[in-house]
Image (tube, rainbow, N blue to C red; front, side, top):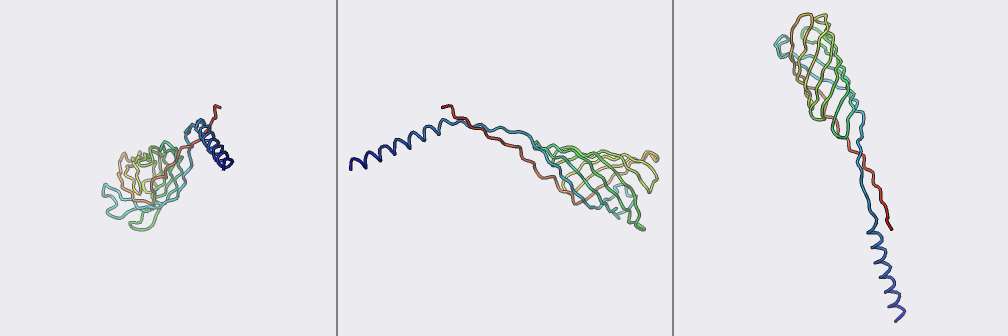
Length: 171
């Protein structure tokens, strides 16, 4: 009986000593930024808001490549082709834009070429999930053309920060 009590006592002291030693281990988490590339192809419909195309939308096909950071900053490029389908199907324009901002609201700024108007234009837009509101400025005609676009581009997925844990035992 004494041996059993001695064994139980030693086991309890061992558990307590182990718990105290484990409690002395200090762990620190450090966070660092991370990023990833988000590539998407998309399609959409675009309505000219100045009434020049009536209610008939243009069809858009494009590709977008974004660098998404863990602080929700986004930057990249967007290229798209716009097809006019009012009378017959024809290539209306192509544009290349810088894309920047946050995951939920992106700004676009770029240049394009209009096959319909035979000239270069500047483009600027605000973009959210599945939509873009912008305007084109034709340099030759000195004319603004506002547009509303509905597309298949949703907001880029969130990127998590990298977490590294380091533990030290001061004993």
